[in-house]
Length: 335
Image (tube, rainbow, N blue to C red; front, side, top):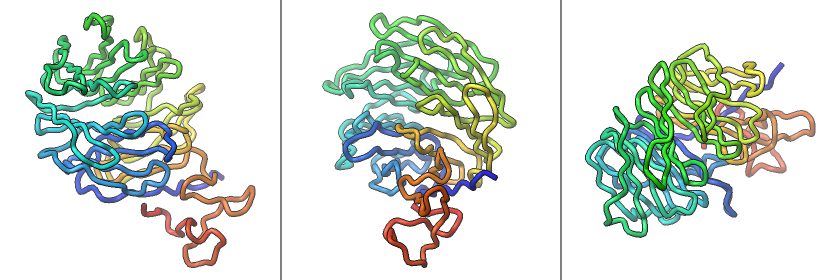
């Protein structure tokens, strides 16, 4: 019998969590940022979910959030018609970038020098962060509000999604290379640089496409409407969550469902694997983030395996050699 998942539950938000992103692995570990309709994006230690700080300054729901690779900067996209860039170490607001409509998506280049934004005004904007007062480069062509916009191919290309269309753009010429039409509204998009894979969800479909050509590699059908999916860094498995409150884990090669369980007390809006692949995070309508082990029972972060070959939960009130970092006996460990 499979061991039961014991998620770490991260509280603090007061409204639905609609987006989340991990940094890369830094000398201080890796970090997690969450976007929420409460307008207060939060930064956490990625492997434990411990709260580090809240970025205060937006005057509306925050729809998108991201960290740069080394977690020194954060960017957020909001309903107050702005995108903001933050110092992720001090929490200070560095730049406010005014838009003409709701901003839904933000993404740094690998060198953190440029920020890509997309939103309800159907335009992609590329800001040079060394000259924030300068007008951005603008790419037009989408016919409805942009839901997600991502750098790809070493920042030489851009992938963006509106309602039912995914478009691939050339950065140097600012022109469309290819467009992909899908049957239903795109709910999420993830770019996996290793192997150039684009993960798209729409309806009950989880589809994998080449990020360079948009040709489909494979697709899976889930039992319920899916809002987000993420591919494991080693491409062994994928996780997905959606409208039925459940998290699904599939074998990427065979499509076999490996696990499914109720993950939240409301629809799941976003799921992402950590950069080391040891856990994945989910964000929900219920206002919480939860961290889940990729391999249940493995000692990692706040999860402890106390007997070799046999992993159990250690109740908090029992003495332990690792009493400062043991499992809670409750099904959910509060971070």
